[in-house]
Image (cartoon, rainbow, N blue to C red):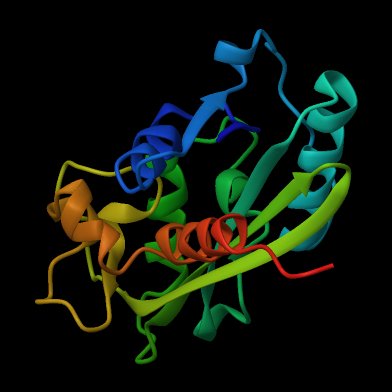
Length: 195
């Protein structure tokens, strides 16, 4: 089964392709001939994921899925949350976003956080949502050169104290919020509920 993945983020595509089981493939927007940024105007991950899936379904008429992910930090009341990609401004600079986050957490004892991913699937015109969560803590300073986004400052619970950016794709996949949501999507597609 092939699904259009409503993103042009190569990191997300690589991450998902690395864990997709045999028999499933994804095509990002550019490979599907779509070269546009889809707005994320809503104040929830769920609404943004749904918006992207609806836009791609309208453009292609085919089955597709989208995702929206946010880093939710307890001491900041859940921020940056839905604004994670633009936390430090509209240029979407991962380094600037992480720097702002570390500034906001200076002197705070509680550094607990979680990544939350919502995948929205459009299958034969019907929409389904899948959530994945990874809890962890925010490091005192960035570490590692892998991954993307906030990976250099996020240490997942249950790991060995390394940030996501210090892990291989396979290692990150053991904890990843995106992987957990994808596993639910694949389980649904493999054994769809009886009508």
